[in-house]
Image 1 (cartoon, rainbow, N blue to C red):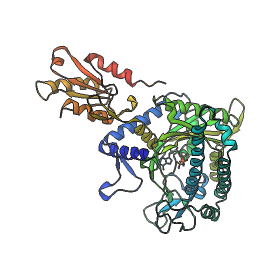
Image 2 (cartoon, helix red, strand yellow; image 1 turned 120 degrees about the vertical axis):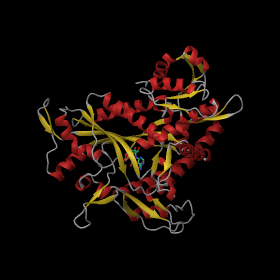
Image 3 (cartoon, rainbow, N blue to C red; image 1 turned 180 degrees about the vertical axis):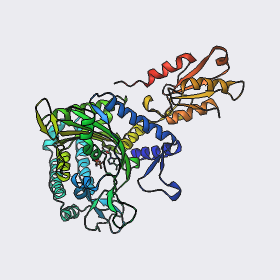
Image 4 (cartoon, rainbow, N blue to C red; image 1 turned 90 degrees about the vertical axis):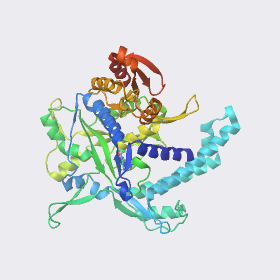
Length: 508
Ligand code: ATP
């Protein structure tokens, strides 16, 4: 565990040192859980967004894009349930003055019980060796059974209390479990209170008569309220999808873990409108398609897993998360939800406008069902950074940090190095770069030794470096060096583009 925490710290430090991510307003000591993307971060982020857009919009004839405003009519959030129910239960510890999500405190307690069970299983596996039957052990060992029962009892109290908004019940559970504050070790807790996660502000020039509006906590509602505009003007037929990327805002109670949980973040969401009754088929389709999108980056499959929800939100009839093995362990990266007609029906009811689709095949008019895929761009960014970060010991005893990013996501694709600053080498290098920069993000560097320049580009994940030397002037060849293998080969300038393009191909 310590190692994993170290890894996150190293990634945060590296992200800052190499211009990927900075703390927001750092000169004023930062703003909690808000971050800025630097010169390399902005490129990586854009490449991830483009990859998503291409997979969702360009590759699907029946999916189109949308860019709806962040501000929306306040009633949108009334209809969607966010005004009344987008709450987290919070609790403060009076000694440490720290604030926690009450349900997370209980879930952490559950995780400890689970860890105990796993420890028993591991111990037994060692003791019994090959003859060990894990399933049988889990079903019969009294200590394991007792802990499973404890976990079931806790879940049996936590989830119904959450559903009923029973804050006293959650407080009682924390007390009964004797949960202590991880910082102060004390059990001196305040009551549990509901906390709405939406940020609000005023619209209008004077406070009087101004109306309270919200910063959107998800991009999805912009899609719902526009679905008929898009359907009609785009002459879309069900099933069809609308995709959108953009900022979302949530006043998270506990915002730790770098860009994993931010107060301002970016979502990439797609709402797929289907005939009622066909939603399970489409849910299965999108589960599969989204997992493929992740695996097509070339990242090993064991870094991903599905986590199907047993406890469904009131609007959903199926839901799963794609979890990624972050430095903090497996956590949600993307959600796939079958949302039924909950949102559209709610908007129909509150707005009084018909939001029905006329299906010419069945001659019926209905409110479509929706299957959505929703991924946090910043979380995907963290997944890519943490998977790529590699410390390597080289044969000559030196060390390098190399970001093994999927090449098509790398901020810079080709770094261009004149060997020296004289003899016309920089001019030749610029001429070569001019021929490449329309198609590839290039970076020109003439300072320091070639070795140092290689290290800098390893650290930001540049897949190829090319060096222009005296021989280039004679025969128009350069040294092309590949990031991961560090292999160098002499290639004609005319071949650079095709070699790099091949490397950047996405395995669809
Ligand atoms: P969590 O349980 O982690 O709070 P959620 O279930 O509330 O997430 P959704 O409402 O399903 O998340 O949002 C869809 C996606 O948006 C998530 O899978 C995640 O990638 C991203 N996301 C949600 N909240 C944040 C946040 N505070 N910071 C960064 N990304 C976020």
